[in-house]
Length: 407
Image 1: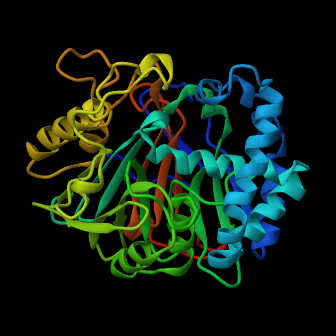
Image 2 (image 1 turned 180 degrees about the vertical axis):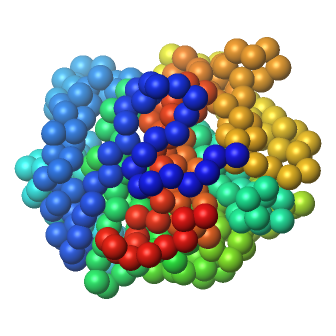
């Protein structure tokens, strides 16, 4: 079992720090100021990512054959502003202010930040599936720690890994949050707040058409800023304006856990079974399966080369089944055992596109994190959990010099 460590130290079985040691970006102020500080501190990464967008294969596949790539990216960015700006301003003005601050601090055209948001919304469409993920929650009774544990493997093209960041935001008007993001993001994929509420975001692929254009990473950030408990977050997420699909694992400091499955217009909730919740990338709620991509759908020539001819749900179903089998066999689950499951390489012992620790030709596990809501503790690594060590953030919300439970 892994014990608590001081803020920012690392854990693991070797001296290596893995591919990247996780740095904490500590931001303070209102939403514009939070964004401005993010842009200043992450500006080099943001500008570098924008300069490399032409290398992203998914964008290359979408680009009309005779249109120069720079012209295509410029047009796509302007179209993204037109599609998202008004809805973001109406429903989530704080995050619009944050985006304006990021653009100013990083000295970039804000339209490229909207292009990143538009790309996230496109993940719900079958031809764009640019990510995956496996997540699990263990309740306090099943946990060897006597408190709930969450874990998530974030599977994505390795191209994006250098742009990940861990962001601590403190604002006078909303709850403080600790989140894992990509450098240009206003929203987040995974995070917790000062109350111990945790949300982990797996991509889902609802087929219903959106009525508004706001990606779910924005909704996740808003939920962390405005909710304190799982049930508050479940209602907030289900009622939130959004586009795209998601399978969200939600847990709070009391140990209450639920999975919220979202499409653009519909939602469903799953409760823990025998103290476990396991999420991949297909809907399991009875009310949501009819909005999912059909189980017999295959990727076509309109997708990236590595995915062509692959059944869309193949990896998701196999990762779900494997995690259910491995965790279901454990009477109680220690943090080490939970991590071992998320380092699993299948029966063969060789990681591939269908294993929980993913080593595919296009998708790979680029980030892994563990969250302990009762202790407000998050452990993060950028890389495969099988070969990296984790940086441990133990209650970063505690003020300097404030005493806390170190057990």
